[in-house]
Length: 179
Image 1 (tube, one colour):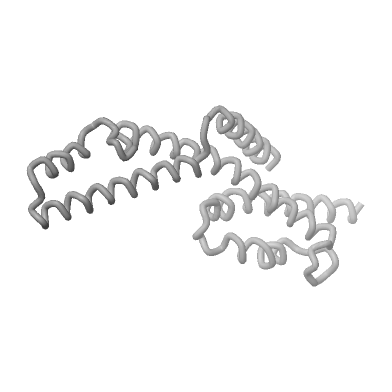
Image 2 (cartoon, one colour; image 1 turned 60 degrees about the vertical axis):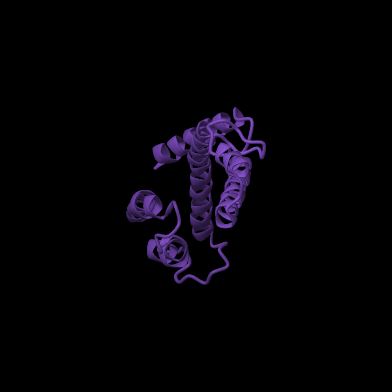
């Protein structure tokens, strides 16, 4: 369990360092791509209007030039530029995922600690909450749907590691009571 948390922390730290090396954020890349999409749609609408009205040969040639591999006067990205922005944004999204995953794990651990100390605000039976109470109160409502990006990892890898640790801790506690 400690190893898993340490690895997630190291991944998050490395991801944050890598993100700091970019000149723009993923949101800025999204905005750049959205502006390019809008420019492309406007150009297509212009070409469609010219075709529908039978625009002059000069007008049609000007519209066709907007499909060239170099940026148009409208500031549209070239094919290569767009692909570079898409790739860069994808890299940032992967890095942001690792940062967010670590934050989610820290939140899960905080909730478990709150269950252990009884400071959850929930009325769980028996003083010290049992593992199933934690799963019912926190894990299932948040991660049980499988819809969020981290749900599968947390429910199939991380939560079972937590359960093992809780069971070992409970066994040590019972063993100490016997002595």
